Image (tube, rainbow, N blue to C red; front, side, top):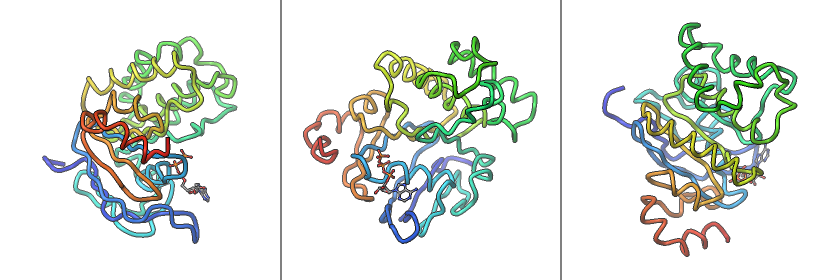
Length: 239
Ligand code: ATP
């Protein structure tokens, strides 16, 4: 709490068994700040979000949330500490209804607050309101992405981690997801880390971005700076 960063990642190392993916990531995110993490396939973007959300246990370094060291805590504790994660691949409960998926997000939130959050999610994603009883597995890709987004918001996060929300979706769906994201950002009260392979799209909404390559930050700057140097960004993205 206080005026310090919402998130401080220092020399973070993480991977899978003997495979080291992140080789010392250091970054911080201010309260209400929206930052992007860009990088080519396999750069380690997903692993970075997983190491922050507790889905993957860091092998070194530290993760500090609002001044509290949370390194190595399990994902359910990090959810309670305010980390909302929209994972890559969405990870919905395919056989549960849309509404049950939303409410799973809110299981550690007081009931009255869960009702408010649900209203807000359905305001942001009106399409979900008309399919609350439908099986999550029966939704389109775009609808599933909205649901995964909504479920993360149901945890009442102070830090939202978004893993490539645009992947595999039609441009019109991506546009409506990013409209919802902009609306959320405008409301304030939340920091966001947005992972994207689509640098142009990410730089439209973030204030600052980091470019990851082979598990290291190779470039960082404001969205304006990076947007003006697309050749450099593209070079690092392998485009
Ligand atoms: P993408 O856009 O393809 O998801 P990324 O930048 O998010 O790329 P990561 O998913 O973090 O990259 O993957 C980094 C490296 O870790 C890759 O070499 C990948 O093969 C490996 N990796 C990812 N998940 C696992 C896993 N569960 N087990 C073993 N290796 C993994």
